[in-house]
Image (tube, rainbow, N blue to C red; front, side, top):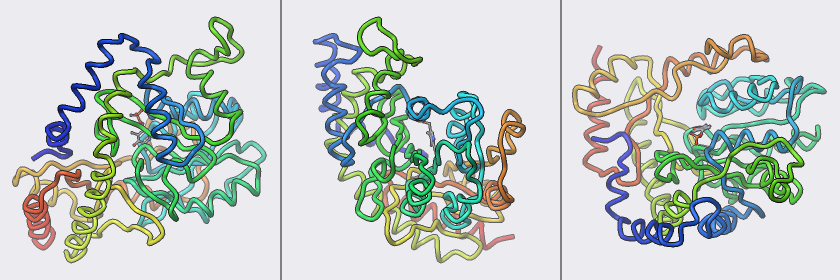
Length: 367
Ligand SMILES: *Cc1c(COP(=O)(O)O)cnc(C)c1O
């Protein structure tokens, strides 16, 4: 059994992928070819944001977003400790300080009520992560940002396709950043990512930063990066967009069934999703105090699992002295001990899901 079955997806769209890739090989414009603009237009329309700027990865999207806002040494960015390290990494890379506030125990997302106490005159941005595929309380977070004149960057690497109050993830705050890493809800065949923004000046800055800060060829008005997404990877995304709506519907349907089944098991806490949003289940992550037992039983039954994430950012060796911690981060620390991700993808069959849930149930009830 695969943790995320990308082969089943490829089988269903192989023809479209081959045709799209063939076209790129024929025209030969491997950097900034026509598929790049085509994908950016399709994705901007999908999210409702005015601009989509494709970039080399999700990490690069976050980095370029912060650079466009002018974040630098001495600045602070408020974010969650319970995330993939890239969220904090880009802040530190720019010489700024990640300011960490705790998450909600049920959704594992940034606790909006704790943010305002972390704001100082140095705060340049708030960066909530839409962990596992559902957004945080974006309207509450946006209101805090607006009140203090601070941008809100959604790290939507795990939530492309999700909705919050009828708006699409990536278009629920000033800036949205996503990743097309192969195992994300919308993935290419390598690294890729995108930034979504409706502010024209920010979009212009991001496009320039993406290509070495050049305003026109060999004329550099900013410090930038080599941060473009390959034409071939954009072609792959375009082919995958044909089935994306169906895949998102399947993710939501499978996630609901899975959650209802898991909710019956004593000792296992099913993931929580608020009523005003959808989750696209980049990860299907339960909580349990018997994680080691459960992991061993699943492994014996041939079911792969993963832990997203075992160690919060402020406990990571490279980061512990570089973050400012506001309040306790006990919830994040406890979640690191409890969370367990199970196989999840749009091609997960009912039979496999039943086997996983049965194995989980037996392991949780024993010992
Ligand atoms: C995957 C991920 C990233 C980084 O995306 P890459 O494309 O791998 O650089 C950033 N933040 C979160 C929450 C992620 O899950």
